[in-house]
Length: 148
Image (cartoon, rainbow, N blue to C red):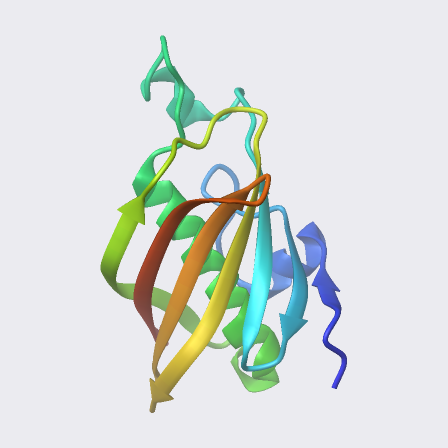
């Protein structure tokens, strides 16, 4: 199995329903079917949330970091299971043990390492890390469910 599967922006749009301004990932690399993937988020000062979070010290909100991890996981699920594409939606159902170690700032390139932990029926569990310049910025375990 090819361990170096990459998805560009157009590929992502075919796999998950998120769109601007709420699509939080720009690319997916190193996707291993049913195992793991790395989402890439290029953080720009032009993103709407920076107008209020915080104007004098703009930082990417923690909930959006976790959302970017979850979108990476949704791409992993959808790509790994062709029957889900265009038919199923992956919903975030829980977040556990989230820790935000350092702020993510405009200009950062964030690597969102997501690993599949286990599943039962349409319910999936993952672990994720947000990394900037080889430093872990945030970690979380989270769950998702297939619907529709």
